[in-house]
Length: 268
Image (tube, rainbow, N blue to C red):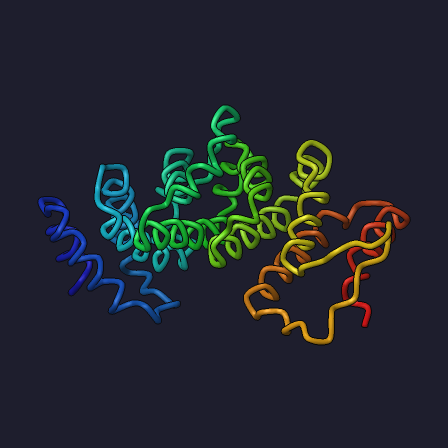
């Protein structure tokens, strides 16, 4: 189905029909990474239409389908205008249960723990994937992240790493990495105001099952211990990438102290 047909039907579609139309579009474009420039204006309209649907009270299955479509659209940096706004980014952060107002940060653990269904969990993961794409592809979205204090919200989420479902944790850490890589001005805020180095270190300790027996000495694994799960390795790599960004401008001595502690769990 062409984009003109989808857009014309979306104008009057109910929730069920909206889900059907967008699901078909996503299926047809799941492997699309290069887009027809002639349809750029139509894809911008589709982005706006999807955001409009997400702004309504629709069921999680419809939210997930909308986010899948938006994730595909967000591969094209030229059509992100409707998303790379305060309103668009707040829709996505809300779906990802990332609280961007200071008064709401303490609610973040309750919100993520309160997910009742697999469908709701998939909504959170899809929203995080969208945010990663949008932040990577849009300088305007990166600025909005600064404006809505997303960095502080991500740090608040790090405090609850022990409650993460794998994909939620993976994409929170990836979003953290992208924001700290693409906005050097945010690194100081993350280090000093948000204590992000300490929080990421705690995430690593939890992820790698580290048990300290001294100030700089970690307990060795027992011979019968199973290898670290692949999912834990994935999250650990994202955390280390974020730590690398945060320590780029630190003094050599401070970096050595941080990584001396972080490297010990890997000593055989």
